Image (cartoon, rainbow, N blue to C red; front, side, top):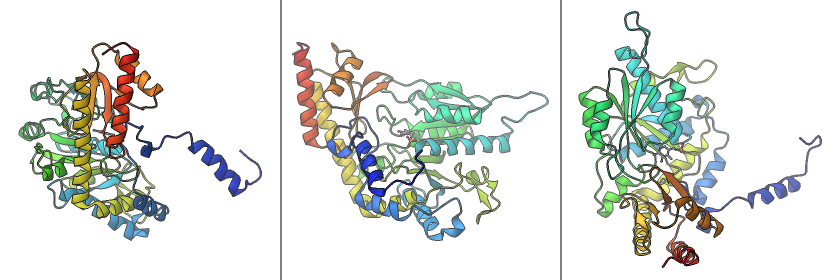
Amino acid sequence: MNQEPLEKEKILEELSKLKKQDLEYSDGRILGSMCTRADPLAKEVFCDFLDANLGDPGLFKGTQTLEDEVIRDIGSFLSLEKPFGNVVTGGTEANLMAIRAARNMAREEKGIGNINSENGYSIPEIIVPKSAHFSFKKAADLLNLKLIEADLDENYRVDIESVKKNISDNTIAIVGVAGTTELGMIDPIEDLSKLAHDNDIYFHVDAAFGGFSIPFLKDFGYEMPVFDFSLEGVSSITVDPHKMGLAPIPSGGILFREKKYLDVMAVKSPYLTSKEQSTIVGTRLGAPAAATWAIMQYMGREGYAKNANECMINSEFLADALFKEDFELIVEPELNIVAFTHPEIPTDDLANMLEEKGWMVSVSSYPKAIRIVLMGHIKYTHLIDFLTSIREIKSSLNIR
Ligand SMILES: *Cc1c(COP(=O)(O)O)cnc(C)c1O
């Protein structure tokens, strides 16, 4: 590092040089991200709350109120009047908290994972769909759990029979996904909820991606399955404001039905203004809670409905256009993700050719396909340009 302090101008110059290497959402070239451009208002509020530490909430009572209100307002569109939870860094941390709560609860209430002189020690298990986000692999690793992946049906939703078959005496949680990361599919949450409830197993819904669109698309007449706390088996839900909630990164949400799930994770927090802490992170930035609060007020239900609807319209347009160009759609888009392959072009080659033309697509793993997430920064005109590139690639390969 430099010995002498540097001039401010020089530092900013260096930063702007490197920032130019970053892509901008507004270019419409980022086609595979679930994040999007943060609204200027949210950025302004974020900067204003950079000193607030939610790890020491007694010092930042106003910011604490903002966090509580964000969780309460998210609960209002997930059919839970009085949710308990936190604004966290994203879906990964939210899922980790949910699984930690489930693990601790099962240990306390059923003795699963305790060393028992008769039976020795058995590793607690969680059942997730094969389509679940990789954050559950991290959670299983960190919490020392066995991760069981249930099969999917022909539409890439979890097969309820496969989940049922995998339930054992050591099952501590079942996970369903409302808006899978790769394809945007919604698992049969109602059936999973019933199965979990009948077997007295913790049920977590990962709606990191779908949480800020599924409830609002209903307002526009889209038929959407029930996935929220109105189902009695649902114990917790992950929702990411930094995806379809249009909040700046990092903003994730974890909502629990009851306070006992936070209590069972709580550790004493000496030297701070709080007595206990249930979050994983200690010193915790208050800016995401404040910025999320601001953007939620600014959008309102109407704003989110409009955003989700526009993303769906673009998704349907792109899916139709690709179909007409002889691409194969993996599924009919259920949310704003379009995944496709071409019978004559290997998917990785296609991804590379698109990248050479400046399009940053992503490739899904199961099944392997080009995956486009139609976030709000992708406009109709970008899609027209994208389809031109698609036709150019086809003709360069002599495909009509
Ligand atoms: C994005 C996503 C996650 C992980 O969220 P991060 O914010 O990247 O940590 C978890 N689950 C699902 C379904 C997701 O789409």
